Length: 506
Image 1 (cartoon, one colour):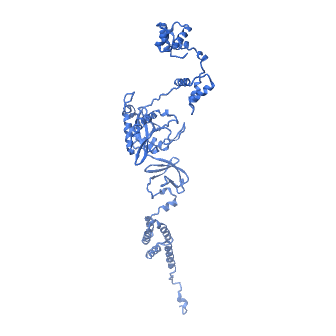
Image 2 (cartoon, rainbow, N blue to C red; image 1 turned 45 degrees about the vertical axis):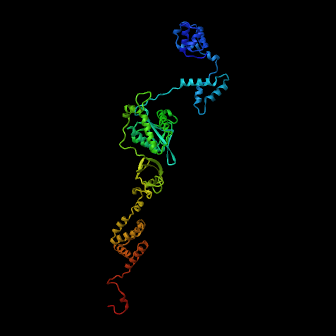
Image 3 (cartoon, helix red, strand yellow; image 1 turned 30 degrees about the vertical axis):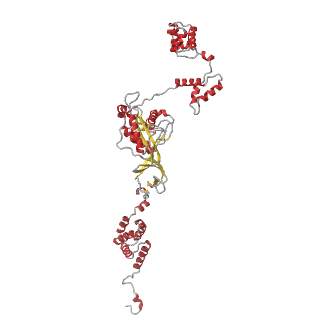
């Protein structure tokens, strides 16, 4: 006997016993078959029940369908708990499970009944948790699956759509980007905070690489730039579990709404610039925020202003400045590569160590074991590839880097005016002053081995003879020194050449 609901069974018994209708009229009045009416009345008569009004639905059900009565003559029932477990496995279908069931039970249910049993089982056993979101508590973010396009020249470009929603009010922020890089991801969050006029306490992304470097169940590794941005605004990042879209169901719904109400709406329009796409997206989500709810009073904007805006954290005085992080090994010249074109110095004792580089549009910062060890103004000059701080150098290197035309002229002036004039002239002789640095250093070092007077004389002589090489200056200084050393000494105790010419020595 096929089961019917107890309310209909009670109506059959009422019409038959209390109203005195025939079984045919009862069948017509209740919409049941004549056989069903006959079977219901027969089972009640067999039970010998006189007071039908006192029966509850459960008691009537046990009379009409006594335990075990169906199992004795019915077909073998499938193990629905086993079927439900198997359906969660990849590639398993109801058709496959039904075929396996029929192999084991030749007299089993047909496919339609098999599926019907399973659907009833799911309805009774699948329980859903309805989440209640607190105002201002969290912001759910994601990229839309569909993209938009614009044509510039003869080239078609893709446009990616960022979607953020505050689940307590369903308030939306949507923005178009040329790519889905970390820089676009950070900019999207900053613009969303500014649009909302505040910052939620929690940020809930999925496991995209711009948010999570390593997607672990218990301790996911966050993208360093993303975390730094969240710290700047005082928010905490709580990524959704991998392959658990219900963790961020509101933003999944928001993405669907954006795809249907904005992206699909403009599917036939041809855009000729990225700015046109941005404008269309902006107008689209503003319209969504203003549109009244279908089943609730107000709109997304009105609910946000009433319940959620006041609960958001205040924006900091300055917006976050986008920064990229990278690891680099300190080279033997105590510089690290920020990119292929520019290198920045760190303290020389870190040679061979691995450091973290934080780069913004204006600054370069280098960290070692969590401590900042160097900071530089970012260079964009193509000719100046190396940026070096003197304090990062060993003492020997500092001495070399202190060289400059002014420094050499200053050193020469300490000896005298002629030496200063000679060094200045020597520097002017070269196409670039740096080409004369080693020559100047060698000549001044020679001057330390003689007196200042002699150095002045040699420099004056070198100027007059246009001698501007180290080798010629050294030779001139040697000759001058030897010539002065050969001058006869005049003294009364010394005998001159006349003494040896003969004659009287008195």
